[in-house]
Length: 59
Length: 208
Ligand code: HEM
Image 1 (cartoon, each protein chain N blue to C red):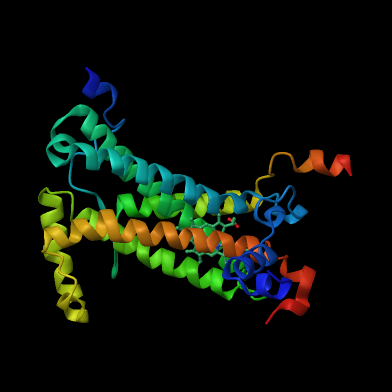
Image 2 (cartoon, each protein chain N blue to C red; image 1 turned 135 degrees about the horizontal axis):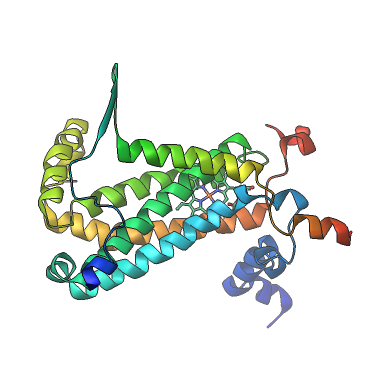
């Protein structure tokens, strides 16, 4: 039971999936990480930072 | 002792140099310029935070050893914490790097901050590689036998042998963590000495 509780949410115990396109060859895991990094980067630039407005009101 | 004698003491000189360049209020400031209130400035600290978890879980792995982390549930859990905090470490570091790249954060005499960052990136990769080959399972056998050809092809194999388990473990748990922690210290102190780089349009004159 405890191994079930602290195990991965999705079963990762299998060979990786690969995307192939011409000379490009990338595992699903690596592609997902790169997409998440790009999304987080764009989010970090665009999302408002908490406390920013409060500071302006104080000035 | 005369004042000139006191001025010549190494303790006096070191104190004046250190606190002249980095007074406590600059090391631990109360406020930051308004442009720093953006999520992009969080990723340097996120990288440090994940490094703390990496080192803490690594210490637990060191206490109990491979037979424990390969076979027990708690061992698997701590091993996974170690791996996933490394994932977050690299994830945040890359976003931090992109952010600093597009801000051209090496402006205004901050080249050494950028260079220590780059060296940190390279050292982190060496730390991860030596970690992968220290797992003591089929994965580490596969990775070491695949990667040794690249290292040998570069000539590095003369002193860095991926098939030498003892050497890889020593690099992973002693040498590289020591270098990383020291370099992170230098990197952050450099940021504090120079202050956060102003936006490009704010100081076009400072672009070198
Ligand atoms: C172990 C990895 C690293 C850690 C823990 C780290 C940590 C930090 C922290 C805490 C800051 C100040 C806060 C911030 O602006 O985010 C900073 C600033 C900086 N980092 Fe890193 N960093 C790392 C890797 C890198 C890399 C790979 C680069 C680029 C090659 C880099 C370039 C810079 C630069 C140029 C600044 C100064 C920004 C300024 O003056 O405004 N760092 N770093």
